[in-house]
Image (cartoon, rainbow, N blue to C red):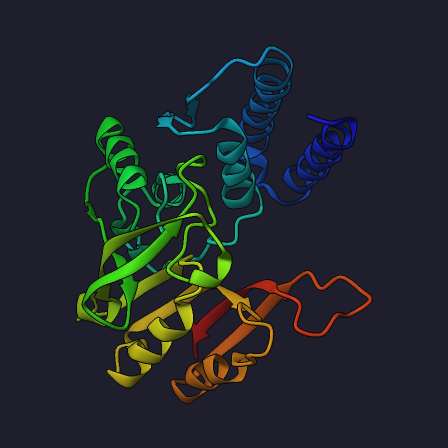
Length: 283
């Protein structure tokens, strides 16, 4: 790691500690702080300085296996500290669909917040799916159903792109525009086929196919069965394509309100890729 990378890690950790102090409920603030500081020290001392390959960690009673400690730590920060997938359920047993489960950090988060929830998880990449299965079985998570499939608007096999040197990468995608090195075939399935009754929360992190899935759910009248959803939207996956209005129109036509979170760096640049989170809620 360069000196820039080292100081960036320190800045990021300081910011996350501030978020924990400000946003974490009093009863869980100290456990969250201690867990995060322990992992930061292990990352900086063990992984960066001593070059130890750490692939297992404990957090909040769970044992987690992963490919890379830096990616694991990023997922912990993103999901457990920033809390984009937090929602207030009307029951202790909410029904959740998790698209793009990766190694299962979001599933562990949902089980941490709502131990009695029922989760259906989808992960397209075979190696990552095997680790996801291991994490679910190792922690004896109940009412979790997993599928080694990509969610889309069609059935059958599709091209899937990854980097063999980065197993479990968060950039794996069905979009060829990303320029990833390895292409494989994975099974795809319409998410609409898995929604036949009310869903409390839908999470999608599927690297570019979210537009197709939302359109298919709307077309088949399944979007109306979802109470709340959070999904990543990838704006300007192709620099000359602007289609955000279509996604928002699908939400509005199905009586959803929404909020959008994005970090747009200035000065603005035409066609620049922008990742954003969209939170939508049924009115």
